[in-house]
Length: 349
Image 1 (tube, rainbow, N blue to C red):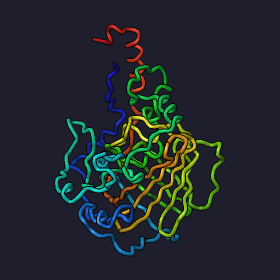
Image 2 (spheres, helix red, strand yellow):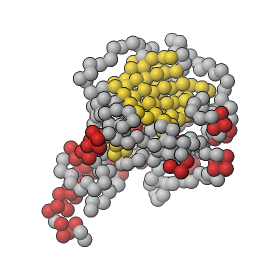
Image 3 (spheres, one colour):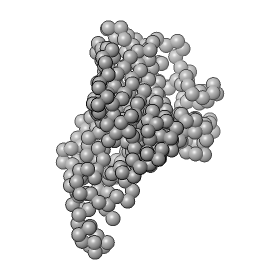
Image 4 (cartoon, one colour):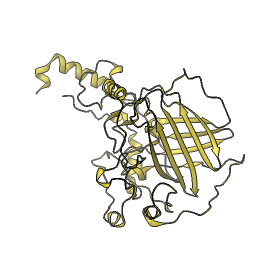
């Protein structure tokens, strides 16, 4: 069997070392209770047990838009799985007793840590908040067929690699795609929001993505134009930035093994997917973020929703994501696969 090869060229080594130095990034402030979902009692169970800023009005940019600018890394979500452990049922937050027993653990091992550190403990039990049980939806029959056709180094049982089409976009350093790009990884979790008149740009540390979002009423692209990250259009609803994204090419996936707590290594998406994100600044250091993913072509229930708080940390250092440089993983997989098939006796040793 092919052994997974760690290629240092696929990781920004300097970033990993720098972001693990000192055991994580501490910050002042504490997360407020989310407005939704959950009962009033559940909303009191966030880490640090603080109240949200009442009637908070965010600052404005020079041209009058609510100001979301800054660095909003999501390291605090590393230990919050995408799907909820089933023993918690419909409960989104840990109880006081469960939270008291929770301890922070450094998971980096060896000279090159395998993950960054969560910088605060969270009571939230899953990123998925809808459906209520926090589970990823079952796939439609068509979705299951798409899943069978997906290829990549993370696909269980795949041993034949003959060309680039046998690899996923993530293997090839192209993109994590959406919605995965707005979900945590085990490192490089920086997210920077920049604004200019008529535009919002979301810069992602992982895979060096730059999502440029018109908020100036620009018409949508023709439906025939498809992109890995889709095409986004934004608008303001009061102090909430609403971003709607369509025109996906369907060549990535709705989850991947790189998302902690993903139900399976590969989950398909279709070109019919639509994602609606909401960014609402509810305190000087806090944004409430929700992301509804609609894809009835592949999801039996049609949709699911991810939600989490984002915390301001302008001291966070975003590093170059050097994936292509020195990356021999694709070649190594192909050479190893071909050798195993032409020298089966050697491969079994």
